[in-house]
Length: 361
Image (cartoon, rainbow, N blue to C red; front, side):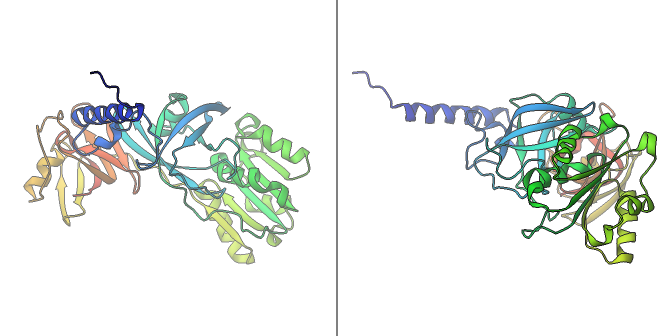
């Protein structure tokens, strides 16, 4: 007698087969990256999102429309999200502001990424990511948001990609702000991210927009800002942009006692050198290593219990988190950098210190 399994049982066995296959090909430490191939956005897995579409904003910036998995919790506009993406076989994590309102009709979220010089992740997202790519996600976080009780007078001060968190706020609440001014700086008119949408908001009367095109007008100073917005001391202000701009704004606002909220994008990690101080932070061991000694060997020589396998870069048995700093691949010379929270993994058997670095061991 022939029996036919119900569709649910067939699907369950198929999923199980995919999971077992993934376990065979995955690295020892991150097999979950390869399972749930049938439904990567389902609940119960690590939170992920699928890129639905990619929209150019300027010559070096794009908006990624992402459908988050079913574990995603609604965000507040102005918050940021950590995105994990595999670049040339290495999981990289970066933080980007959410540019979508909380109640987008299709349930998707958006981030807008500007490619920066030597930016491994930003250039990958802008130049190479296409619809269908699955990204790792964290839940939204951050306090750079509008209060529930909207201010009577608001000022948004942004430059470059600093417009991204503010765009999320404006898409959500521009119609709820009785008096809002945006002063935005970019090199040229074509470099203004969301330029068309911002000008449309201004034309509708929901926003007073002041554009500063620095190639022509020069860098905006606090004195210029005072002339452009004479009542700025009366305005609750949200500022996001380069560190120099925020330093000047914070110093000025401290003197006038105005209400100021700032959002700083972290500075890039300093490029690595040859060798450096290696901190094995879990063990509390610090060693000085030259640029030719594998981190695996440096750790073992200092008495650190180091995971290992083939010791030649094949089995991935030595993969550990690089919490901060820079390391160099001894085979290719490529330098990998990380800042706290990036979630970068490195192979210690084929990596050497390229400056100070902190390994979670």
